[in-house]
Structures are given as C-alpha cells and as structure tokens.
Image (cartoon, rainbow, N blue to C red):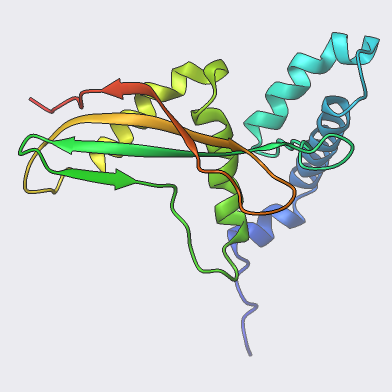
Length: 180
C-alpha cells in the first residue's frame, strides 16, 4: 500500500481556508490601492485615503507610473553614473546593470524605477545609501575607494534625428564608510 505524498508548505497554505481568505483580502487591497492611486485629478476619495493607498502600493512594490503614455509622455531621457575614485588615483565608472536583450525586462524595469528615485531631489534620502552601496561594490579592489560621485545625465529627446549629448551634473559625493 502506498502512502499519500506529503504536501508542500505552499500547498498546505493554499488549502487552508484562513490563508485563502488572507490572500484574497491582500489581493483585493492591492487592487483597490492601485485604483485609488490612479484616480484622475483631486478627489475626495484620493484626499481621504490616497496617502495610505500610496504607502500600500509602495510597500507591495507594485507602484506604477504612466508618464510614458499619451497625452503627456516624458520628453527627456535620464541616466545616472557612479564615478569611483580610488586612493591610488585610478577610477571606475558604475552604470545601472543590464542583462540579456531578451528575458531581462522585469529586472531592467525595476532598475529603471529605482533610477527615477535615486536621481530625484525628492528622494535625497537615497543618495548617501546609493553612494555607499556603489563604493561597497569595489571592496575587493587593490586600492581602497576614496570617493564616489553620483552623476545625473539627461537630455531633451528629439523626435527626429540623432539625440543630443547628455548633460552631466554631479549631485552627490561621498566618502565610503570603512569598518574599523
């Protein structure tokens, strides 16, 4: 006689009525929060629950911005660089990671969403941790990191012809923290 196969933890959770209710409530809350964050213009509902809905959407990492679509698509392109200077005078240039041309869309999209925040004056609190993180990527280098500059690169998009060169602005510099 054969014994029944043991259920995985995921299957046990999915078959539990209480877990099903919790999952359903979370899905509904995420959908309602998304809907509230995309209400047009100022509304009483948005004024009342908008900040909470925004918090839930960001907490769940399901925030969506629709600025790439008509009627007002973005008119500029942005990049950031981390310019790393080592104590021996050598330098390195950090860019957003990119992956294979096929199949890496979600990974690339997440980096692009992070870029929107990390370059923004509205999210200055991200600048120092970003700077320190980039420095930490070079911990195994022959020479210690002396400084990291975060650089915004931007240009206004042209509809026709070649795009103009990026304009550069150093917007944050840090000295890496070293373990004692």
